[in-house]
Image (cartoon, rainbow over all chains, first blue to last red; front, side):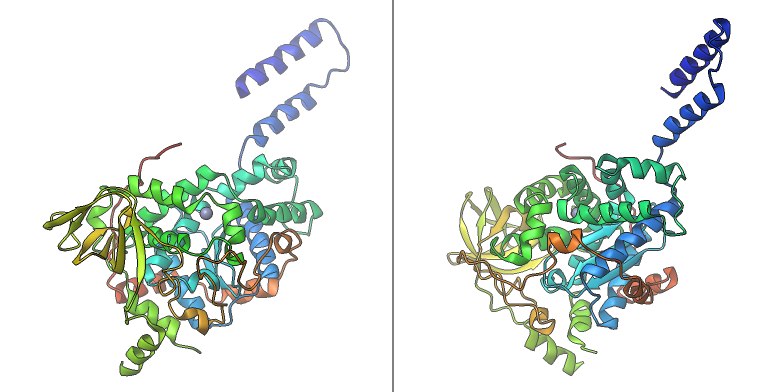
Length: 279
Length: 164
Ligand SMILES: [Zn+2]
């Protein structure tokens, strides 16, 4: 495609000279081609992290961090251990628990992952926590939010960032707009297929990290059993495919591939110990 | 240790006087033990109602009539409103999360949490982000933590895509 565009521009420039169209600007045309090429590319890793930190900062503006250092450290250790089993072990992974009664979890580009205390409070062991974190980690690995931004109403700004037209330092208002658009994705939700993909990857990552891989479906099953009119689930329902569908797909995909790992530990006692120890 | 166990008991982690119910989503073999190669006690037809006793990995211990055995977790759907204990590990009172999830009623319950509006109008809080950063774990810490839990890293391939 790029080659074709380049050929067209070159032939145009040749014919421009041949027919003496005068002020045809070859340099400008080449630049346009470069811009088209660049617009098809993704943001760099530092740009991704900068964008993600802005979105994470916004999330923390909407819901405070849970004031419980022991729980925060624990969730970071579980998350970081899982992240070490992935294709992106070296980005600055950071995990957190939001002081919010809603049942939800969020991932932002560059390795930011948050779960609400409302979700944490419905888990029974570390393998369940690992399953949920691994699902969120998978969104970061597959850059699902970046893809949503690229396809969304602010796609122009996304190209500008990829094109280095927006500097991440210096408070460019266009970056602020892009960060807001990135935060709004949580109100709208990701592509359903991206959710299914993260479920599918999440159970594998939990198994790689040495956990019982059935933690994620166990959480989904618990949530499925909660009254759907519970307002704490409203946003989750709006932004995610149904628990029925997710569980049905996982049931088909996990058996028998992950059966060999089902006797890995779920570390219920360690989980309970951390949750029971109030600071 | 004694204090921990006492705390766990209080929180309902260990006590398992559950009266959860579930329905089988498909025809399902009930096994004597939570293993595929264990003896099959009976086959539950689709849409059988069972009492849920406990879960172990991909298996759930259930009671059907007078028979107790293990069925695959994902062949069950929990019955709403019977799963109060499962959906509450005790952290909710600890974390002051409202008692929600009692099934059956059509009344919207729960303390209002993060809403769409909150997300659309969110303003950055760099201070909270910096605070969160303090709790991040290094690779070495994560590895030590895994060792303490006797977690062993495994080589597992990603699963092929299901229905697209
Ligand atoms: Zn997700």
